[in-house]
Amino acid sequence: MNKAQFNIDKITRENVKGLKPYSSARDEYVSDGSKMIFLDANENPYENGVNRYPDPQQRSLKTVLADQKGVSSQNILLGNGSDEVLDLLFRAFCEPKIDNIITLPPTYGMYKVLANINDISEREVLLTNSFEPNVSEILEAIDDATKIIFLCSPNNPTGNSFSEESIIKILESFEGLVVIDEAYIDFSSKESWINKIDIYPNLIITQTLSKAYGMAGIRLGLCYASKEIINVLNKIKPPYNVNELTQKRALERVMDVAIVKGEVARILEEREKMIISLKDVSFVKEVYKTDANFILIKVDDATKRYDQLLKEGVVIRNRTTQPLCENTLRLTVGTSEENKALLTKMMTLDKN
Ligand SMILES: *Cc1c(COP(=O)(O)O)cnc(C)c1O
Image (cartoon, rainbow, N blue to C red):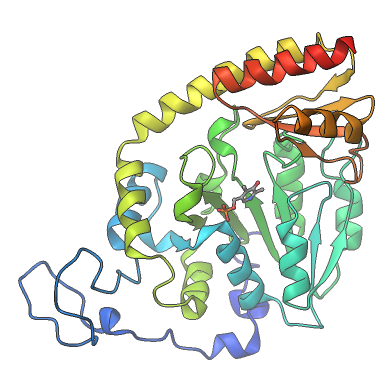
C-alpha cells in the first residue's frame, strides 16, 4: 500500500466520516500559560491537584513522546490502556455485522474480545510452526470487507518478533489497516516500526506503558499513525479519556527514560539467566526464543506443572489451550529473587 493508493475515506465508517469531535470546555479555551479565572467547566474552584478537567489532548505528554520517537504530536493518540486504543480502531473503521478483521493465533486475546464486542467477525490465520505469519494464507483470507490485520510483534504468548520481510509483504499487499502491537518492543532487539508510518499510510503502531515502563496501574496506551488516521480516532475518543493523575505520572516516567532503560537492562539480564537455568529442568522440553519480558516453555504436562507451582505459591500462565501451544507455560521475568525462587521450586518438582 503506497500513499497514492491509500484513501482514508474508503476505510472509515460512514457515520464516523461525518462526525466532528465533541468540543469540551478544555478544548474551547486552550491555556497559553497566562493566569486566567476558569468559570467555564462547572468545576469545584478549590484547588486539590485534580479539581480541574485534564487536558483532552494530553499536550505535554505528547510533546515529550513526539520528541523521543521522532514523530509529530499529530501522529499520536493516547488512550486508557492499549485496550481503549484498539477498541477505538474497531469503532472508527469496522462496520458491525459487515466488516471483518484478521488475527494470527496464538496471540493476544483482546483482538478477538474486541471484535466480538463490536460485532465484527474475526478471521484466524494460524502462525506457522516457527510462529511466523503465514503470509500467503493471510492474503487469501482478505476480502473487500477486511478492515484490519493485527500483528503482535514481539508476539504474546510466543515471545518472538515477526520477520521484517513478512510484515512488509502484508503492509504492501493489503489495502486496509495493519496494526503492529508493540507492547513488548522495549525488550526487543528489533527496532520499532514507528519510523515507518511515513512510508506506509496504512500502518498503525500501538505501544503501552504497562510493560517496560512499569505503569500497568495507570492505564496508558499509545497509538502512532498518519495524521489522517489519528484525526479519525480523535473524532470518536471520549474527551477526557486519559485522566490527570495518569498524565502526570506518565510524564514523570517518560522524562526519566534512563530509569526505564536501566530496569529493562536488568530484566533482560535476568531473562538470559532464566533461559539457561530452564534448560536444566528435565520436564522442560523446549525454551522458545524470546524478544519480550516473558519466556514460553514447553513441558511434559503443562496443567500438572501449573498446578504444582500454584501450590508452591508461584503464579504463571498456562497456555496449553492455545493453538500451537500444547503443554506450554508462559513465565514473566521477575526480580532476581523471584526468578531464583521459581527455578528452585521447578528443580525440586523435578526430583519428585
Ligand atoms: C500487555 C499487552 C498489552 C497492554 O495492554 P494495556 O491495555 O496497555 O495494559 C497490549 N498488547 C499486548 C500484546 C499485551 O501483551
